[in-house]
Structure formats: structure tokens, C-alpha cells
Image (cartoon, rainbow, N blue to C red; front, side):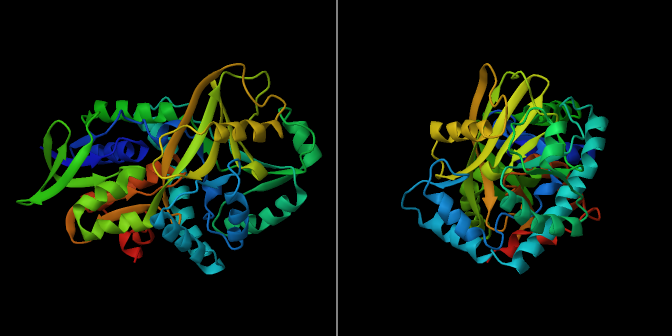
Length: 417
């Protein structure tokens, strides 16, 4: 028997396991596939306090409606009958006002900044070989009106302590030879960073095992039940018992939650799987000096020692497990508008995965009401890697009874009606 069982071996589950093991708790992680196989694997690996502003921004409904009809747009909703999705989208729409936007942004900025501050110590303490660099990120613009509109977000981010620098187009092109002419400006976020996400999750798994934790792969969880003051987690091959259970199953959390009673039934109303895509190549001849967001196309570009990745997009198609080649093509077409060498000489991976999206764009972290010693760490959207260190520290604080390093109230499940 372990002190803590963690359901989910993605970046959040592994980070929580490492933090709890470090706090003196014995940990077993149960993962339905292999550790780090989900959305932790294929994202662009940017650590971005700059992404603190929630997706449900004032004025975003019209933009989203214009995008929804096109399979190549940054946001695509596959036509189908899905009442749960449409109710969820209505809740997103209801939050597209200044008050809700700023309230959620404050909470999102708090966890992103705490995680960015903690991450270098995490990496050094555990010897995580993941190509971490305090690179900053650059948002690149080809449309002057889009750059002017973005200044509204910059003012809000500045209020949360997130610095930026605006660089005019000619000056930026002199700094960044990977870009084509036509850039009107760029916004640099010097406090951002980057790492290689597949290496990061692999190293978290290695460090957790080295600290004495156990990871059981190919062990999907079927039920979590309480009896005699302990939890029993029934998986594919065995049943395990623990004093505490942390549900960190990402986009799969609502399905598991439905087996655990009305309190966790809220997960199905609060979350939807948002499908993201990426393509990884061998290095092209010219690569950017730092991670880029090609702003109008919402394409992220990241370069590592042995890889070059285009990623992003948001597709709501339920748990459809097909690879939509049109979405991959949109990444390449977007990159061709900005980059001299938009693709590499060889594709090394084409990927898609489901992000756990909440309608207020905040993670769900904390206790499950009415279920003592059952905890949630899910709903991190597109920012699981960025929020991983702070989420893990917060879960360790809550489970062990330590004073939390950040206010946990904004992330609790009870905020959903």
C-alpha cells in the first residue's frame, strides 16, 4: 500500500508524484498508456506566463464564429450533434466580458508565474535533462491592426507583473533572419522559457522512480472506491490501496469522474477535450533563435537540439481518434506565410492529442467536496507543462497540510455550478 495513488502519468501526474515523494509520501502512478504519452508529449514546450489572459476574452465570440466554419482556422468545431459541447461553449461565451476575463487572468497569472519561478530549481534539483532555456518567446505580427489590438492584452499582463517589449518590423527582421519580409512588429516576452516536453516528462518519470516512486504503465483505472478510511483504485491488472488519491487524468478526467458520484459529475459540465496537433521535423537550414508564436495564424514554432516543431490549433471533435491531415496542413501553410524555411527536410513525427479544456480556462486543483483525501489536478488546457511545477507544489501542500504557496481558492471544483 502507498500513501498516495496518482491516476494519470502525464506531465501533471508525474510532477505531482515527484513533489509528493519529495515531501515524504510514498507514491504509485497508474497510467493507461505509457508515461507522458498524452498531450504532454506533443506540445511545443514553451513555458509561458505570457499566456495568462484567458481564451474567453471580450469580443472573442465574433472571431470564434468566423473561424468555426473553416477546417483550417485556429478554432474548428466538427459538425455533429453534441449537446454537452454546445452547453460548454455557451458557458465559455457567457464569460467573454471584462470582469470575468480579468478575474480569471489574475488566477491564471498567479499559477503560471509561480511555476516559471519554481521550474529552474526543479530541473537543477532533480537533474532533469530536458533542454530548458530561459529563452523568452516572441509573438510575430504581419497585420498592423492585430498588433494594435494586442496592446490591450499587454497592458493587462503588465498589471500582473508580466513584462513585454514591442519591436518594430524592420528592427525585428534584422534580429531574426528566419522570417520573411512583411513582419510589421513583434512582441517579446523575456520572462518566458522553453524546454523539450517529451524529454521533460521522461525525466520526471526517471526522477520519480529514482526517488522511490512506482509507475505502473498500461494500467487504465476502472473504479475508485472508499472503504475503511482508505481508497481502493481498481485498474486493469490489479487493485491498489492508498490513503490519498490524486486524479490527474487530463482530458479523460470527466469519464473517470462519472464513476465517483455527483460531486465529480461537475467535471463533465466544466471540461471538454480540445484536440491539438503538431508536426516535428529535422532541422531546416534556417531556424528561429527563440520560440515564436505566428500570431495571426496561432501557430507555435519551437527549435531544439534535434528537432523543429510546428504546433497548436484547437479542434472540438470529441474523442475522435483520427488524424485530420487538413489540420496538419494548416500548420505548414501558416508557417509558410512567415518563415523562410517553414518545414524541415524530413518529418520525424505527426501528432495529435486531447487537452483538458475548462470553460473558464483555469485548472481544477484541490479536494473533491465530500470525498476526504480525494484530490483533483486536471483541466490545465494548453498549459500543463507551463503550470506543472506550481500545480505539483500546490497538491503536495494540500495533501501534506502545509500552508500553500499560492492561494488555492480560484482552482477549486466548487466554482462550477
